[in-house]
Length: 268
Image (tube, rainbow, N blue to C red; front, top):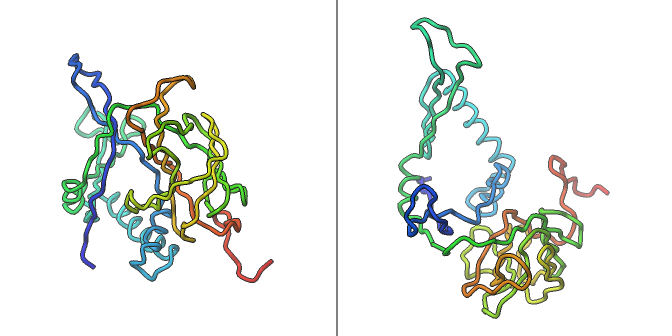
């Protein structure tokens, strides 16, 4: 299989550069970042249909190679994983040519660098400036009310409850609303919730629209013109957008097994 790292699309907000006195000097902070575990990434590969291996097999194979690489690196070898390189070194002052390595005065360090395929993808990755930083919505707790699961699942035609801060949906721009977007899919595939049940700064409830695909992973997309501060704050001219840091698996509402717990078909 030919190696190919796909370029992506980054979104960011500008903030004043505090290191200079120039009022027109800004830096761009990337927004909407999510945290992906090895389990999450393996599931995305399986969902993508590029392999017939199970998620568990992918994780096992990855760990075998990664752990062997780390082991060889800790013996003084350079490790090249194609997408990044790894080399271990040391840190600390030695007061004589023959002073032994001693902790905590000295320590082992790791140095990593991206490989050519990653650098190529970085050159092709698009970056969108979303304008000055705002007080974006923080969707901390997402509850699937049909089964009570938290930050785990979503079910079509059922109620989803979101708790956090800066959650109210305000403004007359057509884009204002709460959406569900499949992880990795383009922005024009978002599905907008048409029934909002609760619209408060710290609590948002809505009916999940139909059209979600069982087994796919989704994230919430929050679009509002609500300004920062009090409920009477002036509306923003341009809607601000925020992506949830949690991903949700679409299910039929049946509770998912706890992590580490195996499903046993036919067992009550």
